[in-house]
Length: 63
Image (tube, rainbow, N blue to C red; front, side, top):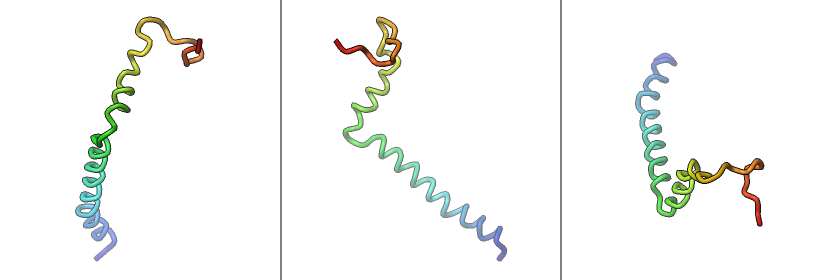
């Protein structure tokens, strides 16, 4: 067998399995318990300064 055939067989079988396992791992990581608060905070970023513009420094001034 030449190198191309060997690499092609590896890519067709083992890399497909590895990419599918990675995909499932990412999905499980995102849906893990306790991550809801993190993703809810990230989802609310566009609405943080809805009433007034953000301060020039990027962080709200402490009183």
